[in-house]
Image 1: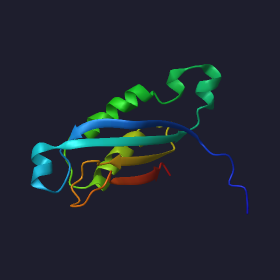
Image 2: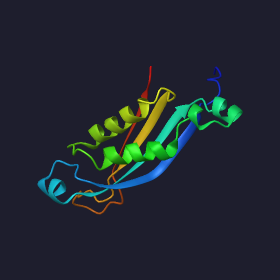
Image 3: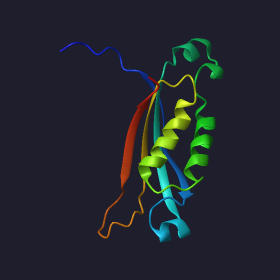
Image 4: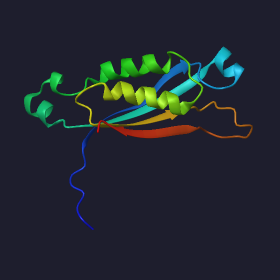
Length: 126
């Protein structure tokens, strides 16, 4: 098997939490519920490491604020749509080559006991 090369550098924000009104059921839109997001960005962090310059990497505090605004912002029916909007926000940063987004809906009403429902997507710039 051929070597796939080195793994890309990653910056991850885990467990970003917000109260949103996403879902297809009227009660979800009326009352809302807690959603969590994990975002893993792939980018080259070597320029930032070499210069100790925040401008040469992703400011994860600013990223968290932007993702939170999407999470608690305009409601959508599907977690897939929410995940795509979050991925698009990450890829708006020209330093980000790829992103993996996992949206958690821990209070989803499935009619049976469950800890969580997630939708995970990976998107690349190319």
